[in-house]
Amino acid sequence: DVKVTQSSRYLVKRTGEKVFLECVQDMDHENMFWYRQDPGLGLRLIYFSYDVKMKEKGDIPEGYSVSREKKERFSLILESASTNQTSMYLCASGSAGRGAKETQYFGPGTRLLVL
Amino acid sequence: DAKTTQPPSMDCAEGRAANLPCNHSTISGNEYVYWYRQIHSQGPQYIIHGLKNNETNEMASLIITEDRKSSTLILPHATLRDTAVYYCIVRVGGTSYGKLTFGQGTILTVHP
Image (tube, rainbow over all chains, first blue to last red; front, side, top):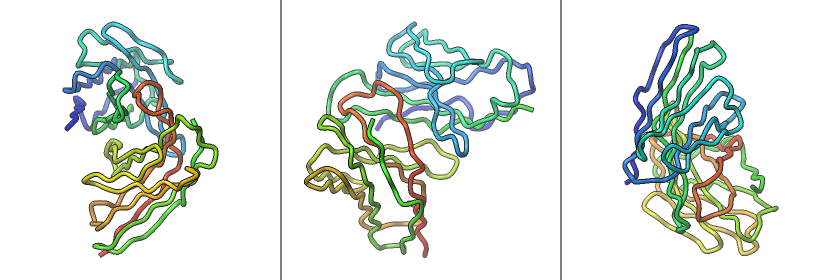
């Protein structure tokens, strides 16, 4: 089974703090993704990466950065946390291959509260 | 990606089959139907996907109509743990590349 783990399930931070969210996958997937999910707004893509040290902006990259130094690990960084970044953060991974089962697999999510 | 339409909510008795419909009348020839579910406060979980043939795995069955304009996800023996939001997504298959877009989904409530 595909396993995607996230460093924390719940996190409380203060405005202005630097926040690191880590994601690790154990399936040797090339593609990794960071989304945030908010009530009424659905799933929104923040950043994704299709290879080590590669990154692409998603729909809402402002206020975030990412790091992918190793294939299995994709980190999301909030440079200076703000209250409007309170959200559920979801990491996903998927293979770059074009097989029938290729899709994205999600981690359990990190619920971040910024005070 | 093609747009999908799902009922906002459904109920099902425990032990009975849950049949969740999805309309995707503008689906293209290279687009697959994917189903995910999200249990409260957890990450989305992949369930099943298909192109035009019916598919079955250990979690569910997927029935796609011959014209591919609609599909039904079947949970054959629903349990209380199947209570979740179920999302039907249509997208180009065979790749994980690109963002997933979830609609409103169907809130399935399984009751004793």
